[in-house]
Every structure is written in C-alpha cells, then in structure tokens.
Image (cartoon, rainbow, N blue to C red):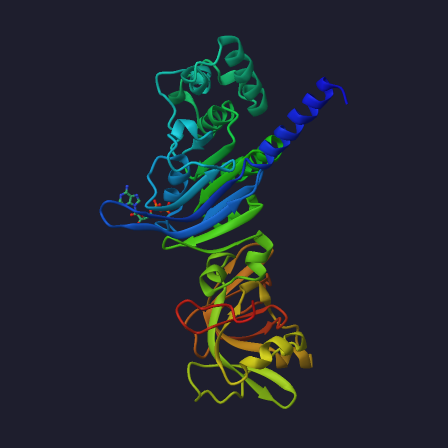
Length: 397
Ligand code: ADP
C-alpha cells in the first residue's frame, strides 16, 4: 500500500472510531442541590452513538437535572459523565459538543431568525462564508426560508420551535439534548412536530437525549426509553418491552394509557389449573376467579399460595359476546360508574368487588349499558404479576 492510501485508510479508521464514540455514558451519577434536594440518585445510563434515548417520568423526577448535568450547566455531586468516550466532568459547557433545545426555545428577541440560527457559529468565530452555507443548509432542512428576516415575536409557537431546532442543528454537535421541546405547542402540532423531530434525528444520525413527562411522546419517539421516578432510573428498554415487560408496578402504571389496573389477590391451584382470586385477604372465597392461561403455568407455579398484584391492562378486557362457555369462565364483574365514548373504542370506568376503580378500553357498542354490573372478558394471556409491596417488582421478569 502506498503511503497516501495508508494515510487515507488510517484517517477512515479514526473517523469510524470517533463516530462509534459519540455516545453518552452516565456512570453512577448523583446530584444533590445546595438546598439538600436529592434530584438524581446513582443513575447509570448508556446512550449509543446515533441513538434517540427518551427520558420519561413524572414532574420532579430529575429528568431536567440529568440533561443539565450532561450539558455541564450543573455540577455533579458524584459520578462521571462521558461524551464521545471522553470524561466530561471538568469540561465547560461550550467544550462538551452538545446542543440543548429548551422548552421555552430561548430565542434572542432582538435578532432575526437568520441571526438567531447563526449565533452559535458567530460565537465560535466560524468564518462568515461557512456560517452562510451552514445556515442555508439548516434552513432548507427545516423548510423555514420564508421566516429568515422575521423576529421571534411574530412567529407562531411551532415556528419558534423550528428556529430553536435550527440553532441546535447548525452547530453539528455530537449530541442533541431536548428538554420538553414540544410542551408549549397545541396537541395537533405536537404530534406532527414530534414526527418531524424523529425523521430529522434519523436523517442526521446524531445521538439525542430527549426529556418528556408524556409517556405517549416517549413511546412514539424513542429507540429506547429510560423511565425515571424520584431521581432513580427504573427501567431502560425499547418501547415494546417497557409495555410488555415492565420491571415494576411504577413502570407498568406510567407506561400505557389508560394506566394499567392493579388488582390485589392471590394465586391458587384448583385441580390442574392455576387461578387468580381477587381480594385483599384470605377471606375472599375464590368462587369468582380468573383461570390463568396455560402459557403462564410454568412461570406462575412458584407463586401458588402467594399474594400478588395482578396487572390488567384496560386493553386486555372486552365485552363478552353472549353465551359461550369461555366467556363465562374468564370474566370479571364490573359495576359501571360511567362510560366514555372515544369513537371506535370506549372506556368503561367502574369498580370490582374489591377495587374502587377499574378502567376497561373495549370496542365501542351503542347498546352497552350506562350503569349496572357487566361481565367483562379478560384475555388471560396478557396479564402481569407484581409483588404486593410499594415497589412492586414484576414477579415474572
Ligand atoms: P423534572 O425535570 O423531572 O421535572 P427536575 O430535574 O427539574 O425534575 O427536578 C428534580 C428535583 O430537583 C425536584 O425536586 C426539584 O424541585 C429539584 N430541583 C431542581 N432544580 C433545582 C435547583 N436549582 N435547586 C434546588 N432544587 C432543584
């Protein structure tokens, strides 16, 4: 190989390595604010190069703090932040090669759209001609050519959001950090904009960490989703696995809408069958029970005699078609409080003998009663079993 070819090959190998390294690793990070608030506790998370990782959790769970720690806007109490394989703990925000998009867009009101987008490059003293080319590329990518000479106050929320996105993209950073970027938009625009962000992220292939409190947004956007509560990470998984195999009752309740129903009860053996008997103690007689699908037997066998929380998704119930034996067997009695019509589907909100609220999302039927007690069929292939304590570990995964 002649020297020039070898140099090119070496360069390609280095480029490749650098690309492979532009992920983010959080290693046992914690943050306690000066007022004593413990916002993040011993959290570890690896975001692969090019991945779109969504961090989701209720308000106050520490999501924004995690982003600010990655960006260098807050100091770590413990742990390591690695960006592109490099320890970033001591790096200034401007040296971390990350671009953050905030909820309130934080555009400069006195600057035009063009200058807002160019601003990060001006600050970095990028040559004028290059700034011009990079701004043009971003403007074309986002389709905002007609806005270039306007000031932020005359733009709609959606347009401002795009400009904020443009200002992040123009930097060509190693990592994008998004902090609830859609929460100021109305519902319709949120859905179209999130699809655009997803498409843009795939196209640019830039490692992205996206924070939201909205589980639907998390599920539709994320390659993987990290679920946080009270400063702790509960589970990191693909959207499908989070829904199908939640690690504990918090994840099960937070992911999926309407939230999963949790029914107190116990597993028993009845002949060659395993059954779930609802009720808070041993006094419930078991006359009404669910027969567990045979597919569960091997994994549920060790739980015979134990108290469990049964996780029953609203979508795992349906209105029985009249008269078949199977229908009579695996049903639960629900006393209807009210019914909410959604179009193709409807939510039946009611109570079981022991549960003060249960929601079933079933196919809409005009003849469905608005009150009284109905038998709803349960798909016993789609159940979850949790420990009955506050943490509620999933007993089967
Ligand atoms: P989230 O983004 O999930 O809503 P945050 O990261 O904003 O959560 O907040 C996590 C916890 O840290 C909350 O209890 C919040 O009150 C606290 N917190 C956030 N920022 C500060 C701060 N600058 N000083 C003191 N406490 C803070």
